[in-house]
Length: 458
Image (cartoon, rainbow, N blue to C red; front, side, top):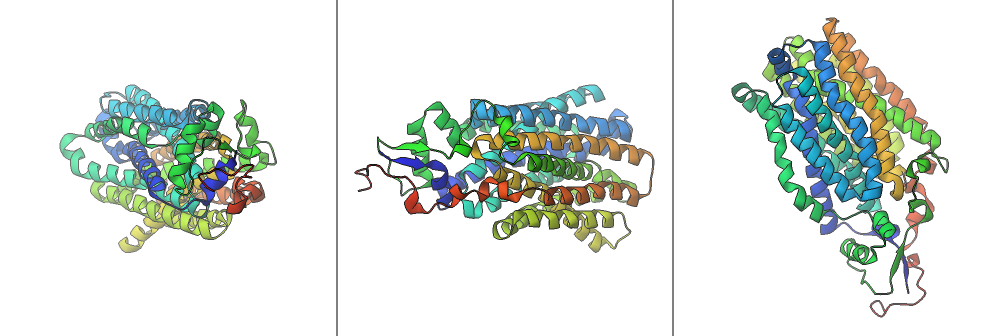
């Protein structure tokens, strides 16, 4: 009989088709998620004109989805550790696809806000689960790169929303951009079948044969035997109180600091995502030009996410994040200045890289920090608290826009949270990260121990 450590085998596996398939589906889900989230910012000027709302009211309308995301991240992030990650992801996709499309049928602010709140449940619920999925199965040496590469789909979704907004909104109306969001529903059966279930969940359910099949896929050198039994380190074994583990074993202060960083980071992300188009239009740019800034912002986010993940796999991810948050503060302040067009586009790209891109790297850090059994819970709560910043941002910046303050004051208000986030990240106890624990570096020959060698390996 062999006792095999499933987590160590996953850590030391080489990237193959199995990992590529998870990356593909998780990235595609994030593209849909990013699209559904970005449509509010892309369509807001047209909605304000069509429904006759002022900037303050528009801020509340945009925040309705973010309010839903806060509940979705908590409920579906925690629920995934009980019902399985595939079910939680599938439920999330149904919610954000159906109700984003339904928002296109709204003819008044209240109905629009209600539909966006329900969509937000799914948008918020899917994020911690796909991060946990990719983090759990990614080889350790390239984990941050794969997670951030996956999350760059968020920026692709934002770019897709901006491109569709530019091409069809004027002829078909802002509603058409929302109707497109229903498409992902048809992919749910394929996603459910393709994504593997969480290893800790399978062990808790006693589904050992299914786990053997999964291990054989990410480690082709493993030949299953009937007597094989998998185990996880004690830190990765779940119980009925996963939230307790966010504050146990020296993780309490770091959990709070993750919450502060997420709050500030998402404040910046949603302030820019919601109001960049309107702020640039107020600065004298046409609607088409203002939408181009959204494209540049999301293109920069994609570069920042992938580049930040690459750096995080080669240097201390904590130090990389501090530098990225400080860059965010500088670039956002610069957006409020009168700059040559070429420099302005470059600055918008840097702002995207250091806000949306940095948020994606922060997600990767949180995913690595928590043990496998509470990873969805940890990410769900961090993102849920962060949604407070996401909810506040469109409202607060909407009030500032309504006050007709100078452009630089609006962008300074968006930049201040970056400095606070950098301080919060610096206070995280990196030594308590699950990625730093000794069991993750057990040499291959120690995987076992083997009480009796299987004939398949003899």
